[in-house]
Length: 371
Image (cartoon, rainbow, N blue to C red; front, top):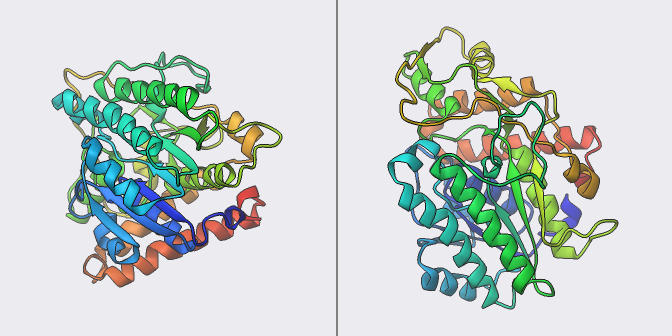
């Protein structure tokens, strides 16, 4: 996979205790990479990181705050990574209303601090900066946003991600034209096993249904490009491999931005997501939160155009919406059934088994990164 770019490579992952970061770090260990994780804490309890005892599988498992420029630079300089995946962030829209300063400091200054650490570390050959599909100024168009569309945001989280993109590309143009190969990536709504963040529909359902209670939903008609967590991660890893190996033809990948999301026709409402999950977890229900977003602006429609990732990288999504839901529901049912939640070995085997199953599906569907 990924042109064997990660075997024996030193890879630095910020935010490795989070939902996406833990899946990425786990996949990298399976690819034979020496992985150093850097996070300030484990953000939720339970967590995917703890459920599979990820820390024991890493070369280094560090605690530090990305707002601490000196500490982060020391960690990068000590590990001497060849590639960095930057995921650490304050990632919740609702929390960004409660703690806007923290959100901007983490998402803007954290990005700047990673780039400053790279400037001081000549070992780094490539950087993949993960932001968000919410970095776009959302005018709720019916078509997908392209990488050249306006950045912005009406809420602190979205605005902070737009700012992070501007900072990253300013550094790419100013300091890394001849240095590390860099790119930013933006993914649609990601779901999958092991997410317990607050105010996200899938973990809200999993928590409620596991307790035999109805799940509370805020915006049943909100539409998003839902995708399994492994989908964008395959894009990040493929882009990182190409940057690391200097494979630019026929397009230059350096300094670019890429969207990673499902096919244009995979755009489902929150109601459709909960109904699909319920088919794999019978007997449970939902109820509407009438006060769920008072005082906050939440966009109801968001789509991405991923044509650039297809043209430059040959990347496209693998799974159908139904397969995405099945992978997600099966992980949570495994966790909550029997000893799953108290048996890290079993959950590690299940998580790594899902990665293997996803790779097998990608191979059967002739995805370029698995050839």
